[in-house]
Image (tube, rainbow, N blue to C red; front, side, top):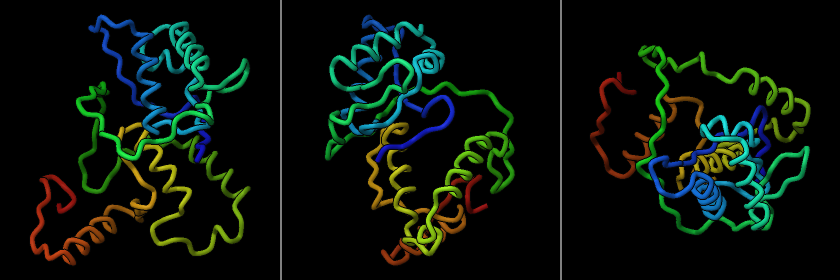
Amino acid sequence: MTVEWTGLGPELLLRLDRDSAEPLRAQLEHELREAIRSGRLAPGERLPSSRTMAQELGVSRGLVTDCYTQLQAEGYLTGRTGSATRVAESAAQPAAVATQTEGTSVPVKRVSIDFRHWVPDLTSFPRNDWAWALRQACRDVTAQEISYQDPHGVETFRQVIAGYLRRVRGAVADPERIVVVNGVIQAINLVIRALQQQGVTRVAFEDPGPAD
């Protein structure tokens, strides 16, 4: 499924080692190839603009442009002047078995954190993207789509979540194995019920954690 993104572009987990003897451009090309081959980036999916990618990675825009051009020549990407760069429809499909990326170092941004129970970081909520998505959904939704759906969650939504987990987390994700819940309380309740059916009589939570 192709995911259409608003704003500057989707999040994308890439690793560049500035201490390596391998040039940064070669590293970036390798990371993007592997993301496409493994299915983290699906055919038709849009990549960040060269300017955005350069800013996020701390490299020159020319380096990213050269990388995109090379991958277009190899058939991994498609794009033309004035339009977004996308994964080619003919690019490799996700492999049946993939391994999760480990040891990835993600810069930690220093922020103030509210440790009250059940309170998420509301300041980081993407209000503009949410408003745009809500308008699009209300404009295009059919009567059938606002009726009762699959109890696991809307299939399209589960496909988007699976794509995000593959692309950003490097995880093997199957939409059929994803369940959308109303919140943490329902999720914990479902997990405990499933464990009880398996004969589990005792569970533990970290402190602080959901049990507090």
